[in-house]
Image (cartoon, rainbow, N blue to C red; front, top):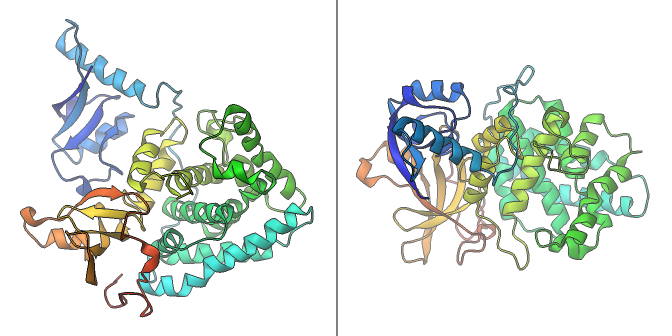
Length: 435
């Protein structure tokens, strides 16, 4: 059975169809990613307001069923196959109470400069806190809370700064890196959702503490997290309960503990430790769960090839209403972009570089710092290209797009070797990066 495309008028769309292309560029619409299943009539209404026709994927059939009925059944079978048959769970649309509409208030280069020490301080705070917990002492959580507060403030001012720093710096310990990067992804998503500063603070602290239970596990298990046999995985799963027990007498807020306890629960009940599902999982834990999953997929590890951010975004989108609530998946993608800050990419003209930032209105056209020419050789001077501005001011035949998202460690593309703000870098880019 194959899949072919069919042109369909938007008024003839049905729930369950997979929209693979539009009659206009994707960046001119509110849809978070290229290609999506129609989940409800609200999706149809959104398409009607932006398009006249779309292309949909149709599973080829070898029966003599009437044409219209056959197409409908094929669409629905394709939709059911999403997630390899795992249970889907549909909830009412997410509603954030009194959401905050944040605006950018700091240029990227300024925020990177002011926040550069923040992740160093965070790693020190985590190291001291984890050491105390391992010896059975009650840790001083004030440094971690202070770091989380500063992270929240930075993400509110300019979310791309911490994303850049977290993706390009080196860490001494995998667990610390995982906790810190999870917190950054989660805070950027929380900002997109409009969570107020207090809730963002709880989310940040919860993510920083969510990995403490791993300090009680054999280090070998952590290195091979995605390659465990059933017995090893059972031991690995215990880290959530162990972490909760370590923190239960520290006086943390219920909101923070919800994140620690619930960040590995899944929307359809397939997570752990309790197998909670749907609305029984706290909102902040749901956000942390998406962030932790994304970091797990994209983080480099010794002896393992991480998934490219673009592939992880596509996988996450395919998991909506299966492992993660659809509204939150879409908010996460809106927040980080299809090519998140720090992603290594190849442009349609063959040049390669790293994504510096993106705009929610131009998800497929990020700002890219080009590091290599078409011959894969380093450029004599770096060049930052805002694809959105470039493409708006040139003929369609000269448009630049991202043709591929490259794996971490691609030869000659090490973002940690470049500083987008300082003269100490190989190339000084302080005058090239604009807001």
